[in-house]
Amino acid sequence: MLFAATFLGAVLNFIASKINTDVLNTAEYGNVRFVMNIIQLLSWIVLFGWFMSGSRLLALSNDRKRSARIRGALIVFLSVAVLLLMLLTFAVGMCYKGRPELQLLFFCSLPVCLYPLLTNYMNTTAQGDNHIVRLSLARVLPVLCFIIVALLLYPRLAVIDSKTVLYLHWGICSLVLIGIIISTRPSFGNLKPIFADLRKENKEYGIQLYWGSLAMVATNYLSGVTLGLFNSDNVNVGFFTLALSLAQPISYLPGIVGTTFFKQFVHEDRIPSKVFLLTIAMTILSCFVFILLIGPVVSLYDSSYAAVGPFAKWLAIGFSVHGIGDMINRFLGSHGQGRDIRNSSFACGAVKIIGSVLFVWLWNVQGAILTVLLSSSVYAISLYSRYCFYLKRTTFVSDK
Image 1 (cartoon, one colour):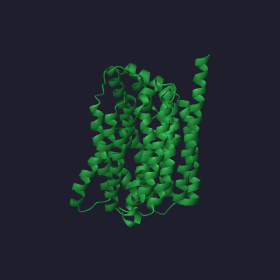
Image 2: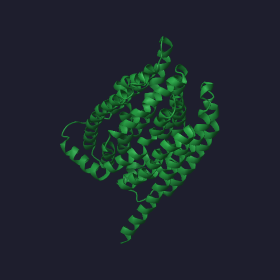
Image 3: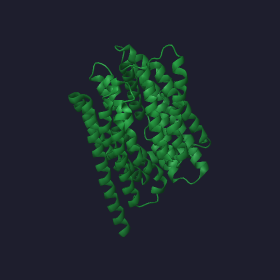
Image 4: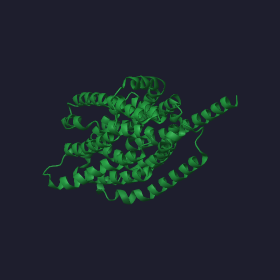
């Protein structure tokens, strides 16, 4: 179900990007994606590992009332994170006085900049709670509602600019995610012991993943930022980020396996061999099909976006490798191996930082693509080696 929802979500995101690129020129679309990239980068800074710690507590919990209180405590952290993100977004906007069109976009994004945080909250808590239905809805409903509203509203608007697209896209998606979060029925009673458990878990587990996520996940958006800094406009930012959004769902398949089995992995001593091999086979097949179909798909866009197709093919290979690493990540995470995940993320992030600066400066978009390929390989290889070491360590302890 989650795979079907993720696949449908990818199709809907393609439709949404098609709608937005039809009403904006390449520079305007690039400006929107540039601002979104920076806000998504900032959103990872304000998390501090709380959602990941809460996800593990939810996976270990067999008490519905306790789980509801954990969700309530996490919503408190979510509210604080939203306020911090708004302040950071405003501060970044103040730095763009020389580019008033970008500064205005940053300021206009303040009411809707919570969307990346809501997405992160759903992805982590639903994984720990094994709320696969809600996670599936979160992959489909927000963008579906945006498409419906955009198709009804865009033809009736006299002027559609970057601000309109940003408000509608993130605004509608945020409202839908808030509704899904409310449906989980979080509880806000007697949160003091929950906060104590979260602090303990965060110290031992979540903060390790936080540093790793800053090094790896947050730097996913760095190439989109440096492309804007090293070019006179944001056209290449639009091309690269559009290719990213088309190819990234390839990494979701193995990640979905890890998410679905996360609660079960807690009680497993290794990833079942059949699950491992079948996931790899399905990922390779999905990548092959994607490479065959992406050309005709990109041809549906305006001809000015033709360069996106070849970019997406190479990115799909990188994301396939990255996705295998994500599945191993979920297993190690379910066993509290935060330091191993953090160290692998550091290695991946180091490659991304170097590539996003040096490679992008040397080779522009091609340098950004090379960065994805190298960093994904480092990530997957590092996690697999740590997984093997974990198996040897646990086998030695059990034998002893």
